[in-house]
Image (cartoon, rainbow, N blue to C red; front, side, top):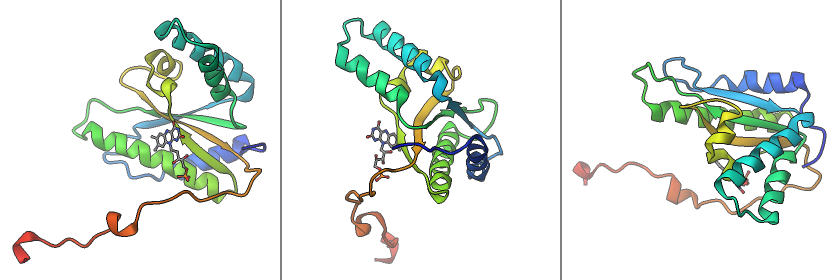
Amino acid sequence: MVAPGPSDAQIEEIVNIAMRTPDHGKLAPWKVIAVALDQRALLAQAIKSAYLKEKPNAGRMELEGLEAMAHEAPTLLVMLSSPVASTKIPLWEQELSCGAFAMNILHATHAMGFVGGWITGWPAYNEDVRDLFGSTPEKIAGFLYIGTSNAELTERPRPELKKILSLWTPAAAE
Ligand SMILES: Cc1cc2nc3c(=O)[nH]c(=O)nc-3n(C[C@H](O)[C@H](O)[C@H](O)COP(=O)(O)O)c2cc1C
């Protein structure tokens, strides 16, 4: 993945499109935080500090992996699940809505000619890293990396359609 990524105006457009997401109760239980290129070194430092706090004996390779993760792609969007507690809408539905929102961001990204990927990994599940972007009960839903592809995209194996799609056959009718 190489430059260019979407401009600031294009990122706004992508998020505006993605906000047309199923959202029971109009809670908007999701947020997006863009990490600018000139902030990536600070992010890398903070992620590595959090990692060392949890794993003081971390090796060089592990830390280099985290460093690389913070610097990847021209555009980095941190997706935050931001559920509303004071509502009868179940948390599960709010988290599903966040996943749908993230996927809509990827769809809008691809429709505009960019490529994007959704990654989690260790930083997505660490509270100190989460605190860089939000607070309890918020969770990092993923890191969306966006840019331009410098290689032909390949398809990976997908599940067999008939294992996924079926026609309901009620037991009573059998
Ligand atoms: C919540 C979530 C977390 C993911 N985390 C990772 C990850 O940490 N590393 C990874 O290689 N793929 C991860 N994936 C899978 C990729 O997003 C993606 O499906 C995969 O790279 C293949 O891309 P494609 O489905 O567009 O072909 C994750 C997907 C989801 C939905």
